Image (cartoon, rainbow, N blue to C red; front, side, top):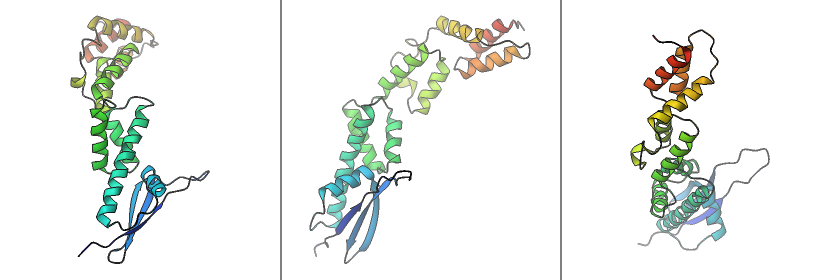
Length: 218
């Protein structure tokens, strides 16, 4: 017995001034045997399906295959659009796709494609990020923490940490930052050490420089 054909229509939310736009389009499926079913899909996917128009004599399985194909194409296009503006990590891209309603399986396949063609490269991102933040005065630990928050392990970054942080330079950068702090005579050493540690310098460097600047030799 052949599977019953399914009718379908797409509802894409309108962009209304001053109103919060729905984040999902609706794919409405209907058949004599199965009744009605509503599937929420990313707006980009809904627009693509709506532009294609209704297709005759599709079974539910065929329709879902079509939806999957369109969703994957839209997810790839979305990744390319994101990466055309700035670099993103794999974790950030996955988060963007999830926010827009792409199913985990679709997002994973789109991300695998992006990695295979070099659009997404966590090692490249990590190296660029570490170099920029080191030049901006960040300490090693802060860079490590921020990369981890973005889903990048420093183990993926070629040359880490030697190519980004020289122990002597780190000490000088910590001294330069500490020298800008206003001394009040009250817990200066503790405050400076806490400030430097928060900027990503090691506890040893933070405390040594704080004692040096605050004149605390204890």
